[in-house]
Length: 95
Length: 416
Image (cartoon, rainbow over all chains, first blue to last red; front, side):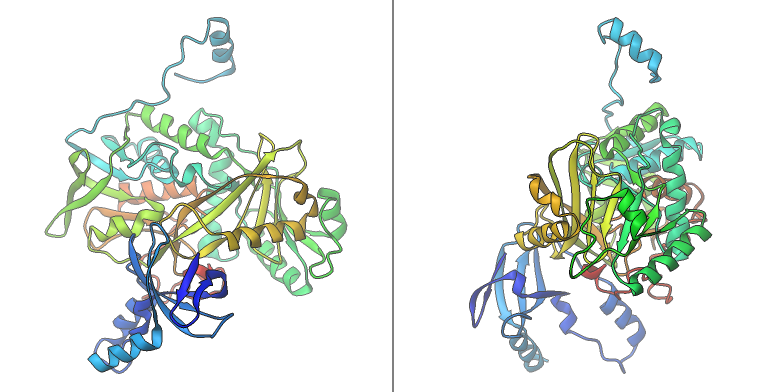
């Protein structure tokens, strides 16, 4: 599997480590209402879709950037790649 | 039809004209008391024990493909009960006991072969950990032996004992472990369940559940609606997809695990051997092929095929442990979709919907669990209560702080 890195071009997936669903960027507020329940769902429950899946990959043996990769879990086809920092900044700007 | 040596001789002498199909290809009825979604090993075993041990009838098993076409026909066929933690070990030891009587129970040759499983260790720390695990196994009646280097050499002289990086110091041996013929297990359970009136319905994919006021009424399928009082779901890699139709999010990710088999060779491996310095395990099939595997690829996947870096890593592990494997040629590589739970162990539990039960999260350990999984799930479906060996496998165990972290890896499925 090759991952088209937004800055470095096509890179071998073996250079990366995988964390999981990109929803992990959206950490719940630990002081918020019902934080216990929110953290249970955040840490343990997953959508686990068969199809397009947004997920976090870390370029450990490369530029050490976090990427949000949108990938079809049925075919391993990569549909979109963004820097996770861009995704997080956009989310903050929108919030 | 009962299988026996006498029957074999009779059929051989009369032109093999008396054999009948091992099970009926049933068409769905309008409704059943019990509908089991998923005709894999676990679903078929559930139907068998539900009919035989719990005396229930009007049971159907719905399979989206064909019997033996899923993970039960795609695994590395290892059976063992060598776990550490009590929540796991009592369950897997129950499974091992069922394996030992399986062929008589089913009247089917599942080729259960207790050739032993050896987990190699390579350091003092690892020896201590295996000694501790062996003690846990002995306490649960599973039996274990700690072999020193010479004893391992007597069992398997061909291993690379003086590997510069990972010299072999000994092994934890469970002599009752071994292998079973995987698809014969599916066929045996299917035949035994069918003989007790269970309808095995193939090419019948469940697309949704009919739920009224929190109570299950039946399932929508590609072959029409089927009413049911009790529905049990045992669909392995497709767990999240199927249970999403009931509005559930599960503590499960689906991952691809690759397995490998070489050309047929003369008998060379005495039993199952696992490498302690990397995830690598190997055995030899009765046909002679070396069957081996390693880690999951490590990213969410529903594609029944993996990628090259894992193949390279697995083969490196094999070369480090038994260098002679380099002379064998890999004939086939394939992938299966594993339902990886957040802590490793499975779930056999009720859901928030009355009459809907779930069995899944088997990671890459589902095959050895087949008999106990079916037995415990049948117990749950019949009585509404968890079986005594499966009380730890609750869906809410993370909420209540009862996770069973056998691997010590934390809630990270690709590390289980």
